[in-house]
Every structure is written in C-alpha cells, then in structure tokens.
Image 1 (cartoon, helix red, strand yellow):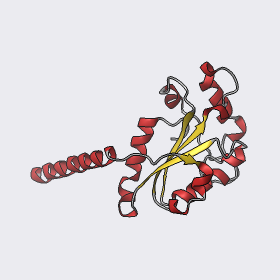
Image 2: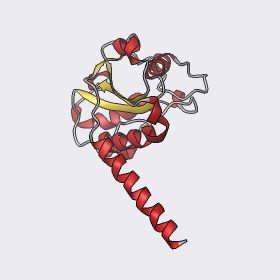
Image 3: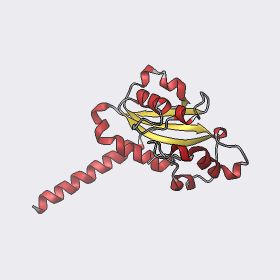
Image 4: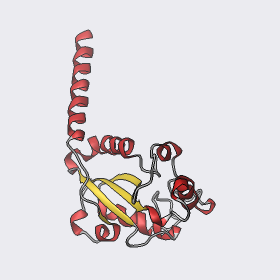
Length: 177
C-alpha cells in the first residue's frame, strides 16, 4: 500500500512538472482587433484567449484615477445579475499604472471564434455567461483586441483550465473569475 501511494505521488509530481514546463513554453499570439478575430475562420480552434480594452475607452478624466473610472465604466448597476463578469479588486490592485491597452478578460473555449462572437453579441437577458459587449453599449471596432494560445483538442480537457488560470494569475485581467 505504501509503495502504491509513493508511486502515485511520484506520478503526480511528474505530471505537475511536465504541465509547468509545457505552460512556460506557451505565449499568446500577436494581438489583433476583436472584429478581425471574430471573422477569422482560422480561429475555429480550441484554446485560451486574452481580451484587452483600449484604456481611453473608459478613461474620461485624469489618468491617476483610472481604476475608479474603470469600475464606474464596467460595474454599472444595470449589469448586475445579467451573467456578466464584474471587476475584481485584487486584479485591479495588481496593476500599478495604466497602459494604452488594459487586460480585460482571459477565457478558454473549444471554439475561440464562436466564443468571441458570444462575448460581443449575447444579450443581457441570456443566461450564458459572457462580456456582452454590444448589450453593454461599449463595443467599438478599434477598442478591443484579442490574442490566443491554441491548445489541441486531444489535450484541451486536461490542461486548458490550468493554462487559463496560469495566465489569469500572471496577467491579472480586470474582470472575470
């Protein structure tokens, strides 16, 4: 019995090490405008995607107050209980300054193109979780961009959540889980 537990622990440690090495080898594609990615037939792939928002989209006053401005822009009362993600204080606090592009959301999907389209077009009354950019009235062609990491379907179910969590904890997108 002790040998079985030891062998299992060694196997788990080996799997964790291989997973960590695999994740360290990954990087997101070059960002492209959101609309271009929705129309990209080559994006009918599984993997992890990363959405950024152009900071000037929500910045109305001085830059020093950008976090408060983002919360005011994103967490409006009418969007509560609409299956949309809220801003996360811990993730906002991880960013010391604002850049031209602000990390908005990281997600995973078996069909990235379809999921991006959902994030854009879902209505507020639909129970499917999503950013619902059109319904929020915030979508503009040049204000959102997307990059991705393809994960083949043969390993997607085993590793996609781990990859998503790794990059979420590294990049700290402002909304989501």
